[in-house]
Image 1: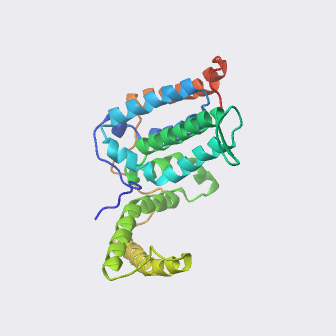
Image 2: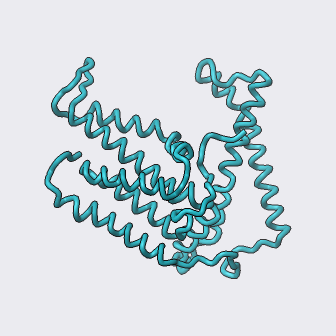
Image 3: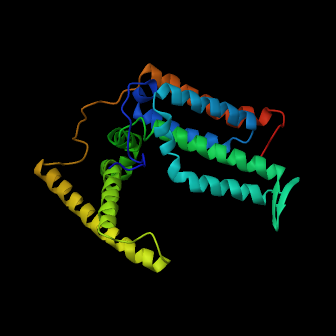
Length: 273
């Protein structure tokens, strides 16, 4: 029984996106979030739509798996679109009581939803789908290494992130198994009023917490049995090294920043939010 969520799961592959250094992908995901949310011109968003489709094709990951990463955030995307749809004033196209749908609101809501969808797909493509949790943790530790001068526990923080990402799919699968097991025993946690639903969720949360603490205890014992000691003395099986592809992709990301913050203001007005 597998969870429908792709949170914490990576898809193995040998594509160009898979081979990129995890540090470049981590910084690239942040840059793409910034440029997607900052873009206002519909022509720039159209370019980023082509960019996203190209990345999806290059990654060789099935569209079904990619869209699974968007599903958990669909409520936020729809809410943001409706908020723009009913609050932006302009030429009224339809009026439903006190609610007015304007042409400007329709355009603004559609572009907002497009920006959020593109942002989620791009960050998922560069992080969770093509990068293992261990590689993300190593990249985060490498990027935060200057903070060691301030006595920040960089290694411990990266290790906690790695463990959290590793066990997210496991806990989701465990919760799914518990829900099915409790349903087969006649438990009712999805009907009735709010108080009844909360009481019904106790039959799921209690065994899930117990299972989580048991897994954490087993992990701690296993680490102690192997004499795990974190810190600067530890080495890695695969040393991180930037390749020519990583450098070229880094310059490409800088070009995207220039496109949004330098080129977009110079474009003649067409559709702005």
